[in-house]
Image 1 (tube, rainbow, N blue to C red):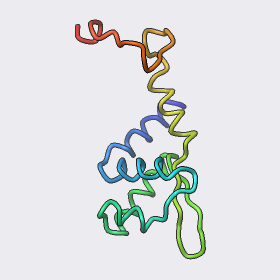
Image 2: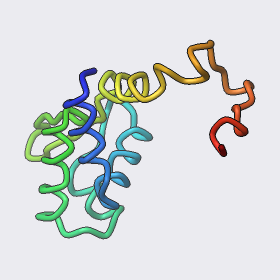
Image 3: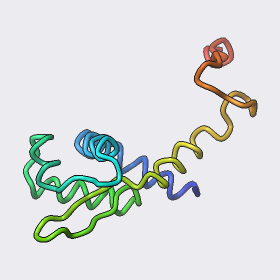
Image 4: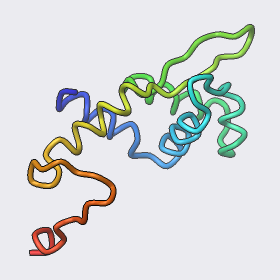
Length: 110
């Protein structure tokens, strides 16, 4: 992932409703969710939800497809993984990182 793509993705996620919608879509898996279900779950008006989903789509984080009259949105897991990889590529001073590996908090604090 390039820096400009990363900035777009982070910018799209840097809003409360978009971040919450993306998290719900990640939980839903590849099947995704209808826009109306997302709006209802988040207590957001449908027109606002459409705007937020468009922002996530422009950042490449979600895709959409029609299923009869409904528009189904799904998280783009490849884009999400690329964003996480970009953010962590220089983690742990270049050493392999794992969830069990302790952070070097002393280095960060100074």
